[in-house]
Length: 183
Image (cartoon, rainbow, N blue to C red):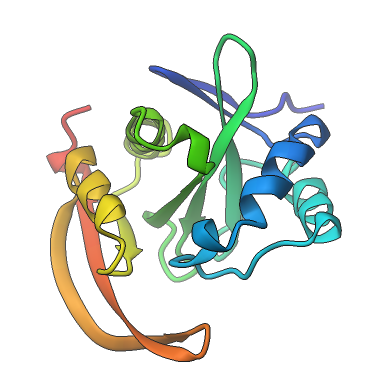
């Protein structure tokens, strides 16, 4: 049996989601403020449980074209702080997209920066990816600042490029090439 994913990342630990994460995961994924700029609606407890059951035991990364969600945990207590995502392109698995969600009580403490830097290190180190990208709603100023602090380069602002939650929304795209990664 293959061991569950486990990656120390500075102030945090990136690992597989597991059933003990359910109360914390369900709480922040149900929060409308957390979901505001995400591609998902608030989760019900049943949806949160199903998501963890599906994502937790999966391989990291998921097969090209699929997303794999990873827990962002406190390395000392293993408490869930949030989660981050990795998606390899179905057309070229040397290209990836990442995302992040943090519980409100854990925001502003540097956990997201540590998690994304750890994930980027894994992408460019172990996976030998060529390019990693991220997209964000321009109204989400904290995430725009986070992506820039992580080292991703702002590449473009796309006007009304997606229809989310009943409205046309802009997206700001960021990316980083392997040769630009300074780890």
